[in-house]
Image (cartoon, rainbow over all chains, first blue to last red; front, side, top):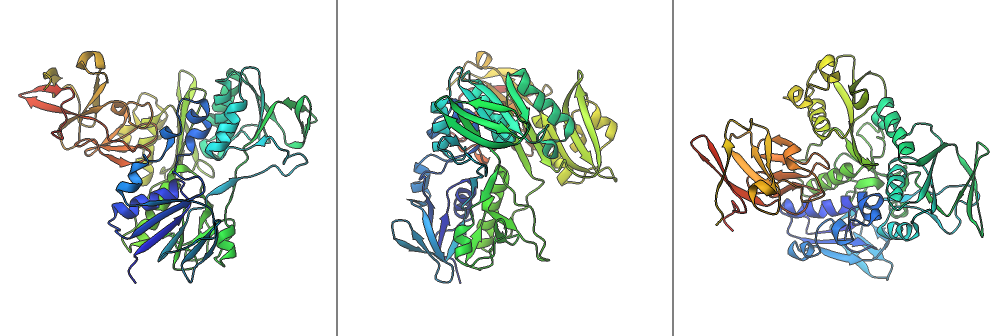
Length: 403
Length: 114
């Protein structure tokens, strides 16, 4: 059956990319994106430039609004409340029913809430949407005490952005040095130390209760410490939004299960982005990926699959983070067995690499090392064997090793 | 049509490398990156990535593409068109001419013949 219409549920990066790639690959049929927030936008700036106010809503739109008319993509502002895979229909919150030959679930994730007493108090914030960022920004200012639970990417980036408003920031995490699995211990330690250098207080502990009185919020930690705050932000990850898929009878397991083409257990329905989880042909479940590039790649793969075209090849996974004026990137996997090689410059670690027993690179990370990471990515993807001494030597551009 | 500027010789920029001709030097309002692409040709684009602030001259040059060193947006060196998000706006191109061994840059003269 030729595909004449595609309906994408969710206008985040993954859903948008599916639409963009369908058109780029020659799909001329009916194409719509349903999203409660309307015009698709990019989320990484929500904890950085958009939160800081140096980028506005137009600046974070994935493409300017006229792109949709030019590419004949219909944006439907609404929330999907049910889908019927056999009939190919989607019901919206206004009661309308839309139908298409293929449905793409790009429902994303929701900020995970703190399941402790007071974790659901009004004013305990999360940062997932533009509206969330607007709310947080409106509360920041000189001397405002912001407590952030979770020192991962969003927590650390928000801490940095909040310092720009002159806020007093306390960053709380159960792990003493966050991000070790993502970038290795040496770089993670360096990055974590930057919080203190920028007057962000870091505490190791688990919040056990949040209370609120006229003075503001109080977070009681497992260590017995109490943190007083005017504003509380929770950044402890997301849960995949799988309700629609579950209710429709699709296979789910901490994500909508898809094959490597992005197809769910129903041939008419695809799933992409943060909410999808790959199940290999032998039944192995991969870890659900939540990074920006993965979302883009998944949208592109699903578009190719829907059109029965050759699937694009994606290399090692990649992510970035910006905080305290530095740019951090990681590619591949830095956790697990292997030899870790650290590149130092003037006594400061600037890059780290993980190699297997054969000397092949499995992962790399760098602080302000854009070209190093781009080179590492090619070294990983092309299985280029590199010399350990050269890797550790800051005078050797990694680019030379990647050719 | 603006005047050509002699920006040195073809030996000044190794293949796979780029050089920035600052706004002050090139007389426009923006820095221009001059790339020596892997097809052997020279191309010029506005240096600042159209996504966020980053120098494309510091990017990864492969074939006739450049990848931004910060968020990995990709641009076609020949046309300035975006090949990969997060950038969505094309980079402005500037004409380059090789005269003997000299590299001539025509600031603000688009290669697209606009």
